[in-house]
Structures are given as structure tokens and as C-alpha cells.
Length: 294
Image (tube, rainbow, N blue to C red):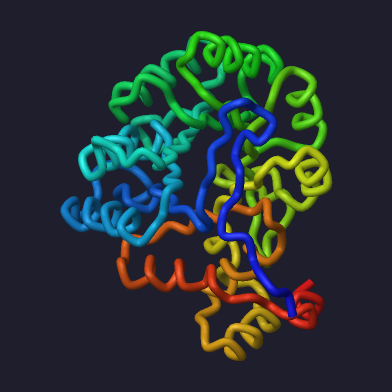
């Protein structure tokens, strides 16, 4: 049996201002209204869960200005500002919601700048600790042109660390040639490790893990629980039963045991589920468990 499991992960390890995030973090997208659009059905409950997450030791909260849009950013500021000194708020740019709830590319340099200014204003920050550039196909601009704009804003002091989201191995390699990449946010979960099609899908994490490990870059998986729904989870259900956990908890446990660079951000609107998710961080799987779940 493994003797320990890392409780933290370093974001921006190659920089002179690395950030230490406790595992797991908390993803806010589910705090929005139906279809991840509009205000939450129960705003006081949404504020309460953010406060409870921090009380329980969570210091990495994931958001985006296109969640809502603007909803999760404003909830975070209302619930937690002025922020604890060790709180890391990771946000994301590169998309915009249409009035019809569509998800649209918003990756031109001037659009990215608009999103950065939105995030700064909504989060009441002078500098964003971590911004993931989510690359969406459909725009005229290139990945390199858009990422260059991100690094320009980093030089201006608007961004401390630049991350990437929804990137293939080739795009990640290109990004590493252009500057320091602090983290990557790709689709990843026990039953969904590679590319998922659809408007909410994206590039998977399995194909880039070797490159992330080589460069000591954390993977912040999204949809790590949702994509497991309706798929064969027989093995993970068996291991979950062995440890007295729910399947959702075991998904988080598997991610944490999968790599010390993994920073899961399970989202929930329930304080009970939040507490269950955090308990999953203390389960150490045996080598036999990990081989069984491979």
C-alpha cells in the first residue's frame, strides 16, 4: 500500500511565484441556473456552499466569466471577498454564452482582453492568479495568436499564471514553446479519459499526461464526474463498496491516486456532497486497487 498521498499540488512550479493548492478544489459551474445559465435557484445556498468550502480547507476555486455569464464570479466575490490570503481563484476565458444559451468561441485577442477585464471587475481583483485559455475551434484567429495575447496581458500584470484548456498534445507543445504554462484544464475522469465530442466536450487528459509529468504541470480535470454517468462503472463501484464510498467519491479518490499532479475540482450545490467529496481525499488506494481500476 502507498504510504502517503500528496495533499497539495504546485501551480506554476517553474515560475518565481508558484501557488500551492490543496487537493481537491471546488468547481463553481453548477452554482448557476439551469443549463449553466442565469442566477442560481437558491442564491443564499450558493453563497453558503462557497463559504463552507473555504471553512473546510478548500483553497482552489474554479470559475469563468462565461459561467452564468458572470454569475459564479459575482457569487465568489459576494461570499468570500476580502479573500483569504492563500485562496487561489482560477478562471477561464475563450468562450461566451449567447442569449440562446449557446457556447461560442471568444478567442480573438481583443475578446480575450475583454474577458480578462470582466473577470478582474467581477472578482474585485487587480491581478488574476490563474487564467486558463480555453481554445475553441470556429474563430479566424490561430491558437498561437490568441495565446500570445494572454502572455502579453501577463506581462502587463493582469495575469499571474497562464494555463490552457481543451488542448491536444500538439497545442500543448506549441504553448510550451511560447511561454510558461502553469496548468492545464482538460476533460478527464475514470470512465472518460480521452476526447469527448459535443458543445460541452473537449480534449481529454490521458493523451497529454506524459507531457504534463515531464514538465511538472498540474492537470485540473473538468467533468470528472458528469461524464461517468451512464457508462460502465462496474470496477469502480466494486472498489467504492470496499471502502464504503459512493461511486462519485471513488472517482475523486481515483483521480487523486492517479497522479500527484491531479487537482480535481468536483462541483456540487449540496454541502453534504461537498463534505463527502473532501473526505475522498483521505483514501489511499492499494497498488492492487490501482491495477484493478487501470
